[in-house]
Image (cartoon, rainbow over all chains, first blue to last red; front, side, top):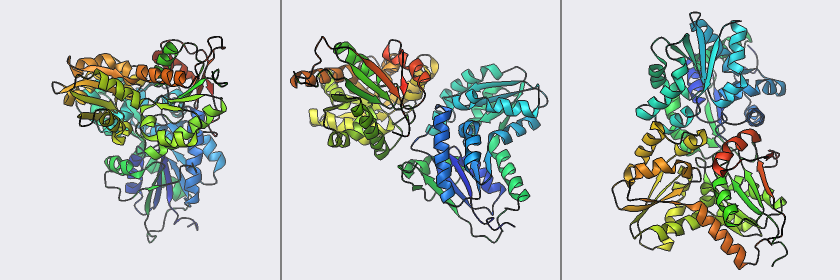
Length: 271
Length: 271
């Protein structure tokens, strides 16, 4: 066991969406402490450029390092798509993104058909999922589409009814009744809309959410490096945000599946 | 005529929305040069806290001051709602927001009924329109509602059809068939959706857009202070953004009503 194994896992996201990844992590690794940072002062990342998202990601990682984290999980798909090389170059701890695990889960789930990917404009434009899938199954076809209105719908809690259904119908038309048999939910907000997404994508398509796959990847990495927390370690789950915490705690509970008792605002001039 | 009268008018917004105000300004004051800053690296402001929006607004103003502007127009409703006192305290030039002019236009338009206001969560939560309207017509009733999905719809160009119609129907239900006779579009994005908003608000309701009223207020202020640009002055319309300029130029043309030839990205570490 390494001496820093009792330290927490750091997780950052542009806002509340990454709490779906945190939820999977704490279920998969119940003995691990976590420190979560939601960059709510600059959310969303998905409509911004790679350079700006990389800058914000480095600042988030810098803060989490001061919290003594032993491993960094980039829970935001957009940040995972564009900022992993910069984060790995600047940090001396392992960095895990959500794209590689999500792509692996999709390849496992697909019966050899075409894999579909939906995400933010930033994620889709980066081509990160397309490249990861091509690396795992060379020559396999990928159909990708940006769905920018899904994030505001999930944030507002419009998860069912006519509006989400019509938006999903419009976005998912290219996937319906074609060769796609697996659809990657390439944004942490999308699992909240999985019911309408599944219905509008059509019955032949299996949805893949990278949260569980990412939690598995983190567990394997910690185990391989002898960095799993000792079961006797004191548990701590801390939440930080860059804007006022009230709305984060309120909306975040929906993503995390349990109440958030306390989230602390960090100095915005720092990040 | 004041010696600085040839200087440009500075305009800032969280992104592209303020271009509707710039459009009204350049039509009302064709001899004035302008410098526009869209804070596209941190858009949107409407879902963020007053403290964070104030911080961003001060940074935007600081940049425009280095461009030598003679007057500052805060084209963003959310920033106008929360940051005017701080901006006025920090700047030695006149600062004009969009809320006071919009509220005045609404009171002129209303036949004595209830005035309705729609805007971002930040604008509505601030109570700025409600206070301005109360100041202009003490005892008059105001009905306000936040419509968070209108901004992403306008940014994505989903301006007509079933989705915007259903979203508008949901948000505008409290205004339909009641005592409201005037509805303030309290966000610069909303004029793009004015057709569905007008239809779903109902035929008895007049829409008020603060862009024209703000341009009038600026014209009056410049005239009163002897600061109108000499007609012989060289014209310059400059555009700056905090994220990459491509998408700004593309989406912005829809808001401005004419192409944007060039937008320059300013150093994000500055703002």
